[in-house]
Length: 271
Ligand code: NAI
Image (tube, rainbow, N blue to C red; front, side, top):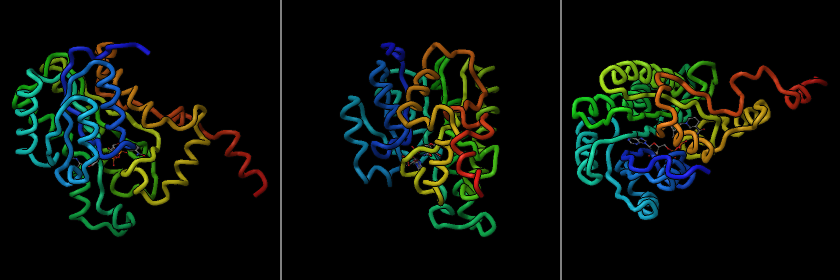
C-alpha cells in the first residue's frame, strides 16, 4: 500500500457515527496516510459517544456541528482552522438521513416536512458546506471535496423513496459547485456512488438485505465494502486525481454497467 498519500494535508471528515460508518473507515485511512483532520458530526450523534474513540486513535478533536446550520458550519471551520493551523485540503461529506425512511413512509405517502428535512440533511448541507467554505475562503488551491451518493439517483429503487431525490440533488450540487470552485480556486468536487453497505444509514432502508444481496450477485467484483470506499476517498483527496472533478464516480464492483449476471439468471431459469 502506498504511504503518506495525504502527508501535510489538512481537512474535515463528517459523518463517522460508529465503526461501520464509511466516514469512520475514511478517517482511519486518512490518518494512516499522514493527513491531519478534524472530525465532526451532529450534536445528537455525538452523545452516542463512539466518535471520541476514533478521535483519540487519529490524535485529533471532535467539533459538533449540525450540517444544516450555517452558523454551526462557520464555527466548525473557524475552530478547525485554528486547531489545524491552516486552510483545508479536503472535505468529506458523508451525511444522509431521511425521516420518511425512518418512519417507513412509501413514495406515495411522504410527509413533506420530513421530505424537506431529508433534502436539507442529505443534499443541501453539501451546498452549505461549500457555500460557507467559499465565503470564509478556507480552501487551499487544488483541494478536494467528496460527497457520497447512491445509484438510486439515476434508477428507481422503490424503497429508497425521498433519498433517491436527495441523492440526485447532491450529485447536481457537486457539478454546480465543482464548476464554481474549480474556476475560483482549482478545487475539485465529486460524488462517489457506493455499493449498498451495512451501516446505520444503509440498513435503515426498507428491503436493504435484498438489494444488498442482489447487488452483490449482479456485480462481477461483488459489492464494494466501506473500507474499499475509504480507499477510493483517499485517492480522491490525494494529488494523484487533481483533474477529476464534477463527476459522479461509481464505486460498485461493476454493478452499474452490468445487465445481468449468470448467478441471477440461474435463479430465474425455472420460473
Ligand atoms: P452512517 O449512518 O454511519 O452515516 C451517516 C451520518 O450522517 C451519521 O454519522 C449521522 O450522524 C450523520 N448525520 C445525520 N444528520 C446529520 C446532520 N444534521 N448533521 C451532521 N451529520 C449528520 O451511514 P453511512 O452509510 O456511512 O453513510 C454515509 C454516506 O454514505 C451517506 O451520505 C449515505 O447516504 C451514503 N451511502 C451509503 C450507502 C449504504 O448502503 N450505506 C450506499 C451509498 C451511499
